[in-house]
Length: 303
Image 1 (tube, one colour):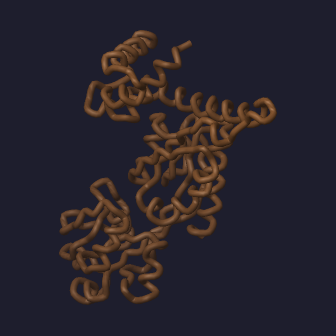
Image 2: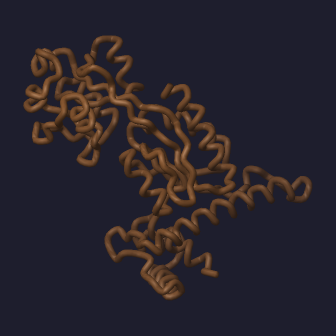
Image 3: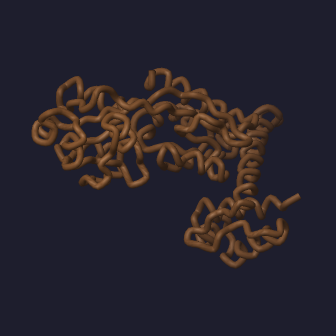
């Protein structure tokens, strides 16, 4: 058996992004944290962290992290259940139940449109704190594989080992721009020739939605054309509305602007991007509640 304190120290270093901040969280000295990590590495016979800034878990470290987080979540739920159900009469106080942390990963567009409304009731009604990681929808699954989160929203439909995957729905991305921008840069509609010179708005350099849409619609994507990189979903829409460029906007944000005429659509149809809920395949009531809330909201928002 690996000492639970050593596993908790590994999780703290990864979560806090360094030994010094992990020491403050654990109320230890930095040298004590380093010693615990060395003890853990001696116990498994392999390095568990890269000595980078920030430290990242190695392959064995990710396996230990997954185990530590799963066991920690189940133990916290068990402790809360025991306090609620088996405390002596008159002594149980829900306000004194231990707080639990749930780490999730989500893409920025989902966070900006429907995720908060979906999960907020769960976090309001439970003694539960959210540790949310935001990344591209095709990369959130890597955080789940690495044991850094318990669940994620991803575009991948295949469950990773030890996890399950369930469909949420389809986010439709409209290629849109301001009317004056369309008149200036796309007077004859969306063509490959016009796309070579028209400035575009993309989320960041890892976001491939723009290139996928142009490749499917025009047969190619002019990646050397001018691009604004705006890694904030709401400011992204502001740039497009303001006439700085054209871009792929998720339908919960685009629909009202298209209906009012403040945006016009380019191309024949929006790009469909299916979304899936991935989570650990463990008997966790909290994970089940979060998954249920997400699926219920997705039926409304992504229908």
